Length: 163
Image (cartoon, rainbow, N blue to C red; front, side, top):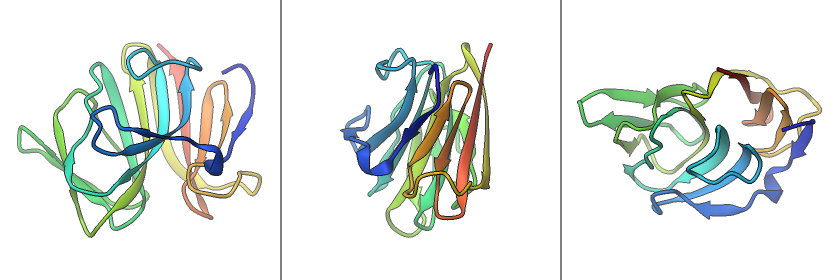
C-alpha cells in the first residue's frame, strides 16, 4: 500500500472462507487485488457460527484475536490446544490442520495472515485512537502498519516488515 487509507467496517464485503464453511470480510490485503493464494499479508474479520475446521494457509503464520463472544479454543491434530480468549492475539502456523471449539456460542474475530518467507509481523492490542472509525473491523492502513478497531476502546496494531 502506498499511502494511508481509511477502511470502514460498513463497507466491507462478505465472502466465503477459503474452505467454504464460514464468512469473512477482507479488511486489507497486500498486494492490493491479490487472491487467497498469492498475498504477502491479509487482514480480515470473520464470524465463527459453529465449531469446525479452519482454512489451511500453507507457508503462512496466523494471528487470531476474538473481538466478540466468549472466545474459543484451537485443537491441533498433534493434541496441542490453544485458548483464544477475547482481545488476546494468538499466533499459530496457518498450515497446521486445526479445529475450532467455541467456548460459549458464536464469535467474531480479526485474522492476520502473512507469508512467513516474505514478511515479519508484530501484532498487539492497543488503545484505540479517537480518529479511528467506529465499528469492529474499521481500520487505518499505512504502508507498513494497519490499525484495526476491535471495540470502542481497543484496536489491533499490526506492523509489517519485509524479510
